[in-house]
Image 1 (cartoon, rainbow, N blue to C red):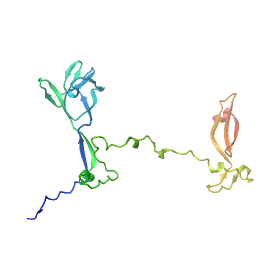
Image 2: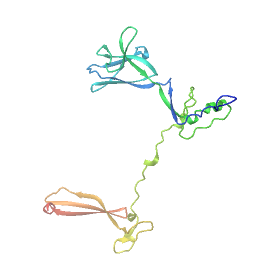
Image 3: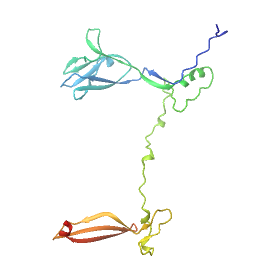
Image 4: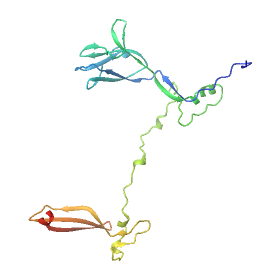
Length: 244
């Protein structure tokens, strides 16, 4: 049978992948739900602060809820409904030292994810070898003194500029002084870098209709020339022609 001779057996290779390490001293958000119907305000109290506080619960329809941040551990708790101590029948229960029936909850430690491929850096540092820096995306468990936390300077409120949109540019045919080009058609050759012919005028979406007075209705249309000149044409029509 083969085996290691003259020393300790070789160490197995370190595991690879990701691992979740519990943090014992970190408060965990915990949800409490009281589903028994009650028209009175419901309060929550428990052994996490020696039954000292009374936390009001939020009512939504027929369900009362409350959120607390609790350290990992096992706690007794009860509800105060209409001034009376109540326990939830749909939740775990237990008896205390005095024989009272309380609800019971166990808060598990929050898990912190880090890369196991670099979890053996501490062993290398202890042996005198320099520790390798974690790759991009890898995370190590924070130190007990908080030195492994991200610096505050690395956080900011900068907004991405991808959503910034420039205002639309002026259409090419409005930048061409076609009225001074000497053409008889009212359109000039498009300048370099543009598409199509540059028309001399553009009809705007401005329409004016006056209230008919004495059987006459006034309709106005605005045209724009060279982006700076505007001409308004007014047409007076008989009310009978407008109705037709």
